[in-house]
Length: 163
Image 1 (tube, rainbow, N blue to C red):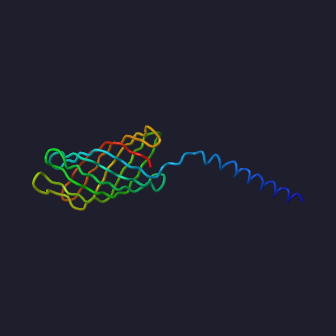
Image 2: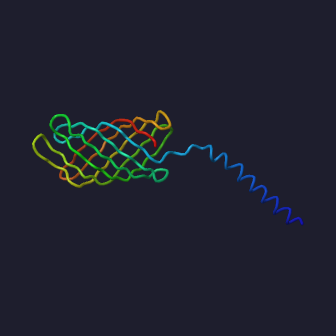
């Protein structure tokens, strides 16, 4: 009988621990896996072009994710471009500050007032910092470089939403 009582007591303790841990686990806020960034971008292609930048990122774990970006920095001093990027992302969170980087492929065109001057399918690399000011709202700034038939750096800044 002593072994039976020990087994029943161990099972009761395990069940009680599991039931007590479930509510505690449920109280931990879950990170939202989708991020939407709405920003303005400046692209250097001989002169600076300005325009909208929209990206959506899906986090696939604690650090890694995938991001799709559409940018149209085609306004300004008759220079600019258009780009669609697909990149792997790596981000770390230190309190309310997120630091991240991207590396992937980009399809883009750049030009001046009268003709296309570069672009194609190439590589994109970049980094960003996001300062989260609320659970679902942050301010973002970043820099990228797109490389194919030339190198085209860009800067962007805007808002990021956790979805």
